[in-house]
Structures are given as C-alpha cells and as structure tokens.
Length: 410
Image (tube, rainbow, N blue to C red; front, side, top):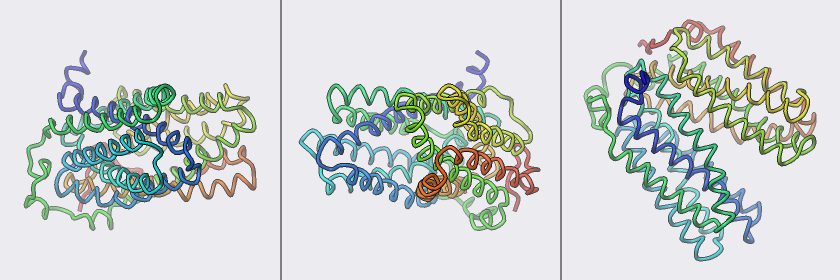
C-alpha cells in the first residue's frame, strides 16, 4: 500500500501511461504473429517477408535521431502521440488490405516503412516522458514498472495473436494492433507533464540556449561515451547469440517446443529483473551495480549449451535475463538523471541508435562465426565479451565514480 500511495503508481498520469504501454505491447506482438502468417500464407515466401522486415528496420534506424531532435524541440508526448496515430492508420490500412485478399510487396513495403519510421520517432521520445511525469527519486522505480508493463504484454501478446490468427486469420490480429495504438494515443492525449516548464510542455523556450548544448554533451560526456560503447558491444553479443546461435543449437540439440520454452523463460526473466529493480532501493553507485549485473549476464549466457539440456539451459537463460532486465533499468535511469532535460531525447536517440543499429551487423557476423565454430562455443565467447566490456568500462573514472543523481557538468 505504501508504494501505491507514495510511489510512481500514486501518480495518475503514470498509471495511465502503464496501461497504454501494456495495450500497445500486446498489439505489437499480435502484429508480430499476424505479419509472417499473412505473407507466408500467400505466394510471397520468406524472400518477401525478409524484404518487408528490412523496410521496417531500415526506416526505424533512419528516423531514431530525428525522433530525439523532435522530442527535445516539441515535447516527447506530442511526438509519441503523432507516431501512435500514424501507426494506427497504417495498421488499419494493412488490416483492410489483408481482409480484401493477398497483399503484395508493393502494398506491404510502404506500410512497413511507415510503421518503422513511426517506431523510430517513438522510441527516443518515450524516454523523455517519465522524467516529466515523476520526480527524480522515483525514476528508477517508474522505469522498472513501465518495463514490467511492456514485458507483461510480451508474455501475453504472442498467445493472443496466435489464437486470433489460428481461429480467424491475420485480419483480426492486425485490427487489435491498430486498436492498441489508438488506445495508447488516447492515453497520451490525456496526459499532462508534472513539470510545468515550457520545454516539458513542448514549447520553445529561452532555456533552449541555456546550459550545455547537445554538441557539448556528445563531445565531453564521458559517461555517455562509455554507455554507448557498452550498449553497442553487449547488443552485438546478445543479438547474435539469441537470433543465430540459440536457435541453431536448439535445432540440433533440443527441439522446437523446448526452443519456445527458452524464449518464454527469456521474457519472464526480464520481467522478474524489472520487478527486482522496482523493489530494490536506489544505489548510490549505479555503475558498479551495472557492471556486477553484466558479469552475471556473461556467466549465465556462457553456460547455456553446457548446463545439461533444456532444464539447465533454461536456468542459465533465466539467470541472464533477470540480470539483464535489472541492468536495463539501472542504465536508463542513470542516463535520465545525468542528461540535461532539454537534451534527453537526442541523447537517448544516440543510445537507441547504438542498440538497434548493431542488429544487422551482429546477426550477419554471428552467422559466419557459428558456421565455422558451431553454436555451442559461441555462447561463452559472447558471455565473456559482455563481462569483459563492462569490466573495461569500470576502468573509466567517469563511469566508475558516477553517483546516483549526478548530472552532466559543463
């Protein structure tokens, strides 16, 4: 009850935001099930599916920096609202096309570009909203609860989407996704930032020229440099492991059912990690906690193929995902409190670019490496890479000495 009365959930706007995020995530996973079945159920095949996904991914990566700029200029809430409305219209159009017959690449590709661009604009803007809703001391818990809402949606969404597609085809699942974007937009429309400053409300301000500029933060923000390098390297290791090495190992050593269970464990573990972050007291040395969790992640990942089959692999993935879920909250909160508020969208867009931009490189490199050495050795290599990268980050004084709430100093 104390957390309800005094914590982030006591803020009506935050409660609404969590509901909107949950609904939107359920819709996203309905789309993730519906799109492949829609394409593969026709004459398109995997080549068409890959092309559509590439259109989405390229558009998302290309618009992430723009999303950060627009969020800082006009307010994150407005950019998120616009992105949700546009994506609702695009998904609604896709549902209509699916209901009318088999869509071709000329119909799917432009819609995928619109959806990817909407996601790219939305992502950095979403990180600016919580600091406008919650006081700094509640940001860590708020980030954790927000992440939990997304992860709950990630656990339920695939099942809901699968049932809808199995019973009635792709169109109803796409309609649910369109409705979830509209619900999220309605929530955002009703939100009002806690902070009354003009920048938080999305209006130009003289404050735009006060204090350090974005170029100053990029040039002299050593903490940002370290976090971006860590995010880039860790995601290079993680994406290649989960998208290439894990399915290849599971295909040869386990089976499809066990592979599905491992992915479920990954989602549930992240949810548990966020829950721990929500309950844990704020640490005064977030960088050290971040590094400790990275070592745990590395150990868990390294042991997956050597832990004695599906049960042991599941336990290792659980260890990894719990630590990863907790670590993500630590990193996001650290950057949100360190970054000048009026620059938060642009700073987070740089971090998101490092995270999402590493995906194609990671999976391509992992495909070549796994082909040469096999899937099992890839896991300890990836785990060691994660642990070693963060250990080297601790050698940087700006990272090692960072304290909770410490802001960028020009």
